[in-house]
Structures are given as C-alpha cells and as structure tokens.
Image (cartoon, rainbow, N blue to C red):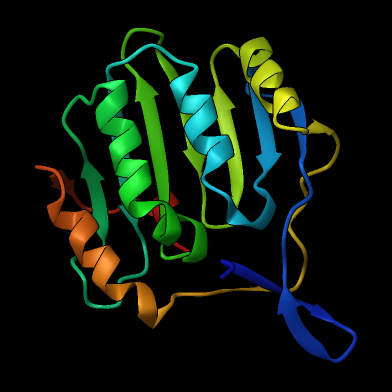
Length: 182
C-alpha cells in the first residue's frame, strides 16, 4: 500500500520516491530531506537508531478517521528497544497511510527526524551521520520532490492499527498547531 498517488496520463497511479536525499539550509539550520521509497519504515528507523536514546516521539494526527481526536500525541521517553518495538508493531500503518506525521527527537543529541505525510524525511542534527546511514541503504544525492498534483490515502484497513497506536503508549495530548493543518 502507498500513502500517495500522482496523476499520470489520464489516471491516478501509486507514487514512490526514489532513494534520494538532499542537504540544504533553512533559516541558517542545516537539514537533510530524503524521499522514502515505497513508504518503507526502514530509512526512518535507521536514522532514529543512529541517534542516542532516549527518544521522544510526536505523532501528529492531522486527519482522523475516528480513531481519536486530531492533535499532537507525545510519547514518554523511549529506549532504542522500545522504539524498535513500536516501529515493528506499527510499521505497516506508518508506511501505508497518510493521516499523520511522526517525529522522533533524541534528548541527548538534540536531534530531530520527521517522517511526513508526503513520505519525506526531514532530519536535523548530525547530517554527515545521516548521509552515511542513507548511503548504506542505497540512497544517493538527488531531488526528493513531491509530485503535483498528488493525493493522500487514509485507508480504512488501517483504522484498527491507528486506534491501537493511540493506546500503545501513555501519550500526552495537545491540540494541533496552525502549521499542522493540511
């Protein structure tokens, strides 16, 4: 399953980024942007695991299908093993549905990795380390551009997983911020 479709010829078709990334500066902050091929959770999991735990997750539910209130759900501090268990349990949902963005933050390194609804990763922190990890996964420098037009998929078959995710941890809830709006 895929999060995004794009318009080709006369119909919608699944969209998958190639294994590419770019490094740029935004407001004097260096960041890496990568496409996530086929919505695979491995690049996100690999980059997060390259950072020192504990990790804080922020699950930003911007499009609810009834599993819970739209909003920001922050996890307690997680160990590497707890993070890997979370990805193992919810990887298919995270890969195939676009109702959310998920952030991971390393408290020790003050580094952030965001996997967004467009199957892009935005990574802040040790850029060279991120490049090494992505290169080892077969990524290369390129342009992880989002197609225009495109459409997001919010899949009924993931509703059970979405509900389970919201009760899997003792999340702290807060309202969406203006920048979270679709």
